[in-house]
Amino acid sequence: MSFARLALCIVGVYSMFLLWAIAQERLSVPFKHIDGQSSEKFKSPLVMGMCQSILSSLSAFLYIQLRRKPGDSFMRSLGLEPPTEGPPTSNGNGVIKSNGSTNPKSKSNGSTKTNGHTHPSKPSTRYSTSSLLLHYLQCSLFITSAAPFGFSALSYISYPAMVLGKSCKLVPVMIMNVLLYRRKFAAHKYLVVAMVTTGITVFMFFGNEGSSKKKSHSSTTGNGTPATPYATLIGTFYLLLNLLLDGATNSTQDEIFTRHRQVTGQQMMFFINVFCTLISLTLSVLPLPYIPVIHPSLPSPNGTWTSEMDVTLGFIRTHPDVVKPLVGFAMTGALGQLFIFETLQHFGSLTLVTITLTRKLFTMLLSVVVYNHTLTLGQWFGAAVVFAGISVEAFVKRKDVHAKRVIQEKEKAKLKSL
Image 1 (cartoon, rainbow, N blue to C red):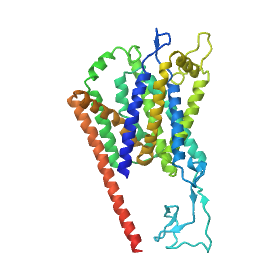
Image 2: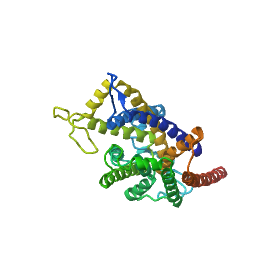
Image 3: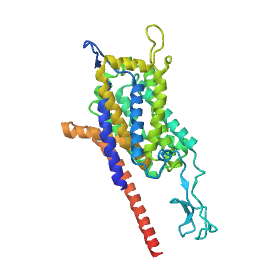
Image 4: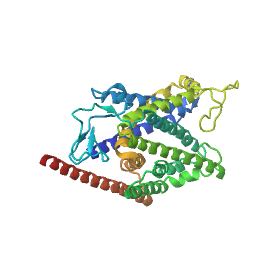
């Protein structure tokens, strides 16, 4: 079941975000004006993110309600009610169990004393709704802040440099897990991270287009400004902030699943996207002054500050062709997030980042087969290193699953003998 779920998550992430990338690329090129004479680019990434977060929260809400159990209240279906602790029972080994969980500190010598009374279910005192919501808000702030820094980095560094930086995303995810939450990983996890990061970096660096792109960007950056060392330093700084915020997001999501085991991926998806919508809506509606990276909109000709929402609505009125790719971007992103948070819940952030990073590699390899492209020797070596790292992860996972099944079979045999 674990392998089937992982395979479904991989297929879902790959398919939805391939379509998402197509829509995003369409949004990055100019749209024709209704007068048919001029063209302009859509320059509202904040509104793009808000549209996606609105549909993502709606899709998560519908999923939760469709999977809602008959006896669950509305608040419990959203994960906002503490889990109940029913009457304690003994598993025969001196360990008290409550609702399927074990507490090794509570012992009863193989029996449970209740003085002839049955204790009713009561809320868990270890649960904190406010703490859970604060963690959701923390993730939303990280996500909303990370996107502008990634977008702004392209104004100072080339796209290949951006891709190379993104290929090392596994490293900040692991670092932020260790620094923020003192989380430790198995030794093979560090090996897999190193192999996947090295393999993707080698694959990107030795691409056939690498040298030509480097030459084309040697004198100018992505927005046509001179590529000075000072500009490169700013772009690299923005990219590092983007990667660190992404790492903080993934590590905080891992912490939520660790602290609040009753939370499902779809519940997390719902609340994080609700908070992202509120933050993005506030920033896009308010006529804020110029804020570098976060709110880079310029004032109107009469000197008053305009909101990004007004600019976006005006663009849609004069460029109606933008609606279709914008809806496609939001819908594929929303459906893709269902698979994203399913992967997060059951396999953790490192596995998720491995899937999202290798998606680009598999897409490139697919284009090699379909369009008869050629790969350099360095690219084949990088691909081999990535596949080797994934194989190590799959081998260890398969071994762990087999060991768990052996333990479960032994427990079943012991219960039958009793």
